[in-house]
Image (cartoon, rainbow, N blue to C red; front, side, top):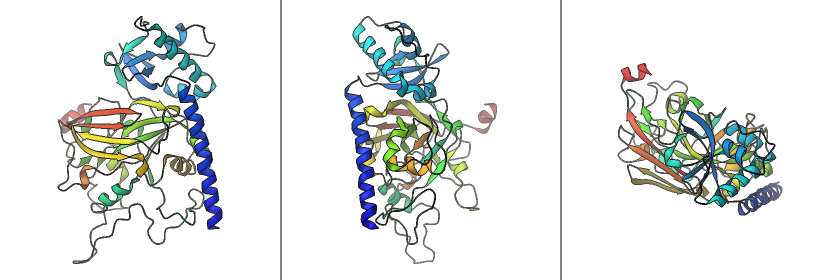
Length: 383
């Protein structure tokens, strides 16, 4: 049985590798671009981002670039994602080539990024799933502050962090996560994040009145490209459209009692607790999502430095797990966990405060940067 599982695992890995190879072929054939949602003079539009500082209004360019296309103009980001593989990818490549060929003679539908307001790239995901403690070093640092981690009696040793290793008694969860005989990791753990928490790059993270233990968790977001349910590992890459950044802002202060354990609504779902963006990078421009550098700065000081290779469960396994629980739909986002370096695990703890700026950078995706403001009760009621 163990040998059979090893063989199946190798076959799945090979299938994913083949999918990644085809993605790289697409990337080599086209100028790299990102996709975002922007506002200009009160009008929202989907934009194609080239060189990280130039934005093409996709609908306007689609209407202008010759030869003309019979494809309907894109309505919003979900529409782009939904029709990307049935003509829009090629049309976007035509648009990018046309703009690049124009050189300094910039068409009227091309803007400097600095002249636009950046909106959340997807307005808004139907479902947002986040993965809890999905980096080995993050598990180690959180073990000391995790509820229930204190010694059971005076002089007793605190529980030893497992670095993602399965605790005794861990078993398969029939129907949505089958453990292989040689899998020493714990099972994936996901929770819901409300789309109402989503804000854009540059928008304020608002600290709720009275909440003083608010932390950051900078994560890569997997953007679902196709409606899928019960996805096999070998087909997981096909379900992904691309990648973005999400800051899973977290209130560590608790709900005032221990009833039913952790309260993910209180800790994760305040307004503004899901900065997202600034853009989406289509998957063909990411050589391997399992090998991407991560850096996080607080007020210009480096506080996290990691790599997606340190994940306990990679992005493809997360697609499998999530899709065995619920149907994934176009534009849904799975935030994949944060590496070590969060504020609550520091000695002494460091929490976000008014006047801070938290900046998250993922290789190939860009930089998500948000200021932090405090708000009093009267200001909150006025919103």
